[in-house]
Length: 125
Length: 108
Image 1 (cartoon, rainbow over the protein chains, first blue to last red):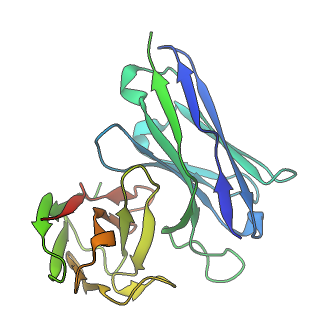
Image 2 (cartoon, rainbow over the protein chains, first blue to last red; image 1 turned 60 degrees about the vertical axis):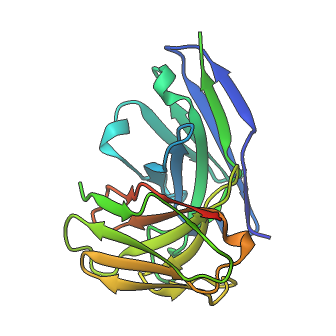
C-alpha cells in the first residue's frame, strides 16, 4: 500500500541541525511532490515546503528559506529535510506528505493525501 | 500571504448532531481549499479537496462547500469517532500554503 515512513524521534541541542528522512513505497515515487509540514506542541499545522522528486526542484515557505534544505534520492525512494540553526521553537512533530496530484496525469494539486507518521524533534540544551 | 480564519476554535456537541465549521480567506482563493481531520497523536487525514470533493473512502456524512473567500465544512449525524481537530488549508497563494488555526471537536 502507499505509505511514507519516517523515523520516530530526534533530540538535538540548540544551534545544531537535524535531518529527517521520509521513505516512500507503494507508488511511482518520481510522479508526486512531497510536502513537509510541522506542528509545534499543542499548536496547528505549518507548511514548510515541497520537493519534486523528479529533478529535485524545491519550493520553501519564506519563513524557512535559508534554513531548510530538501533533497531526494530516487535510488531509495527517499526524501530528506534538513533544518539548521535549531532553537527551542523548532521543537515539533515534522510530517512528510504526498501531494494528491500525479505529475504524469493532473499535475500537482497542492493538497496532501498520504502522510508519514511524523518525527518528533526535541531541541533542548 | 493569504490568511485563513477558521471558526469556531472549539466546540462540544452530541452524537447525532450536525456540526458546521467555517473558514474565511483574506482574499479570493477560488475553490483551492481542502479540509483535514487530525485525531490526537496522529497524522492529519485528507477529507475534502477542491472545497467540496470528498476524498475516496471518506464517509458521506462529511461535506464541504463554498468558493472565493467563504467556506463551510459540515458533519451530519456526528459519530463518536469524529472527535478530532479539523483544519482547512488553502493552496491558491503559491508558494505559500497555509492552514487555518484548527477547530477542536469534542463530544459532550
